[in-house]
Image (cartoon, rainbow, N blue to C red; front, top):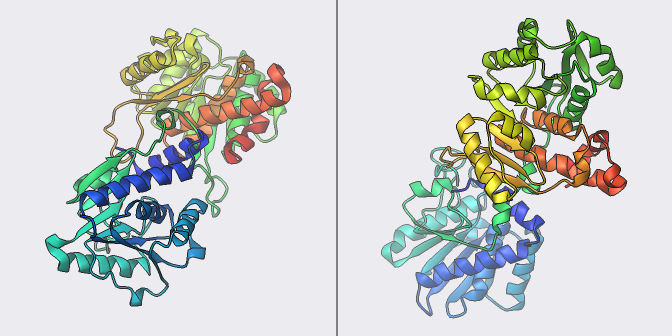
Length: 495
């Protein structure tokens, strides 16, 4: 099954792979036509009720394939208001082909007539809220016709019946909302979670979306990560970076990356000996000195207190591998119960810690082995091994490599709770330079303040790789980690 939000992401990924909306609409329309042909006979009348989005566009295509049926296409609204270019182009084909059409500008005057089959192509999976006019009246007319036609009439819905939430099967808007009572549903690519609860025959039609659009990250991974235009300071997340001691640059890179990835506030908790150095890198950081030269268990209560004031923690960059530091990391993780990205030297503490936190681990392949996981050169086999280890740990994994592998549980309607993987193919060999992993940890930390851990890890890998590719285009393999930070906004918002 696939949620409506995930379906939108897969569509966007498919487009990025070169599968155009026009190709997908042609395939969807053909599949819809096959369903109509299966429930009707030559000469039967078919009324296609179409909205102005791509759902209606699918029906425009289907009408061209119903050559031996008596077809009329009803468009609710003016053709000039059709939402997408590809749907408008298919409407133009209908008119040029002299296929009967009816433009409905006043729903009060609309009548379904006496067809043998009605196609509901009014609203698709992206619809939100109860149907508004003129769609509401059209839905009522469909259901009135369905009640009077009885066994002599069939309603075929495109993707999801209008007025039904594709993820829940409930009416949109309110419990008593108006919705189409469909006999059959043609849905695309994969079944939507809410359809199983409906009293309708569901057909899942493949429309040519490549497997890579589902298995790999892409532009669709970034959907829904923008800012609310009405948000205020702090609404877009605060991140605490716990790092430094032997190294001062690493936590600074992480915190600066978190800001560039959209966090409103970036705090750094680091040993006092490097606090001034960290602060000197950027006046945008809020630095909290920890006594001494390295993190140890004496600092855990202070870290826990600081962590209560943020939305996510990133722990590990530049901490070093002192035994006292590893013990402090383990103690903090055992006490923390919110979202945390664990990177670098902090990773070795994860397998032995019982924590209620939502953990995202970001190891490279050597660190993965140190944690007890396995890896392989083949991307498919490596994904299988990472998935198994993520299930064993009970945490989200982002394993860095030529192809990053992300494994975790998507928090999506209809998902069965099992671990799945995504592969990320952005990035380049120039990113082996030191610090790019610290940037990645900051990006994931920022994103996990406003989406789920699995999506944050997948989107973070994709964005970090895009930024690295833009840096390589400018600097070749002479890029440095700060080049990525400067290009994060471009990667996040211009893709």
